Length: 140
Ligand code: FES
Image (spheres, rainbow, N blue to C red):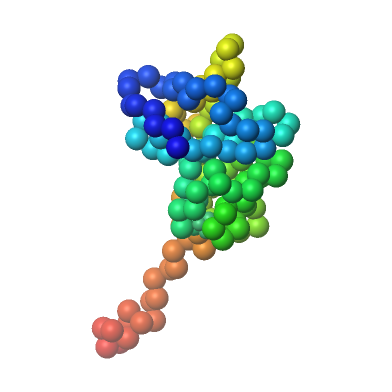
């Protein structure tokens, strides 16, 4: 895993595109957080949080199919273009804008423009309070 030092810039140069093989992902430390950058077989780049929101699986080691990444630990898949889980109740991935420089270096924007969903832990929102047991505890 590469380690990029934090500075005041909002764009980080992660180095040459060639370090990310086609159809794979690589994880980087960027500004104090872990980011996974994926290079699809169609030539697109996507950058998301490196750790799966389920139980922290290393997404860069997952299976990339089209724009979907499947976590290597328990198999939850995410659409990299939206960050949303596919067929599972789970938090969406934080996404980062990523582009190539004129010299084919990977430029990552540190802002998080893609975070637009409620951040529930996997399994859905927390349960509502149990009103019946509360009444029982008060002797009603
Ligand atoms: S840690 Fe990713 S699916 Fe469980």
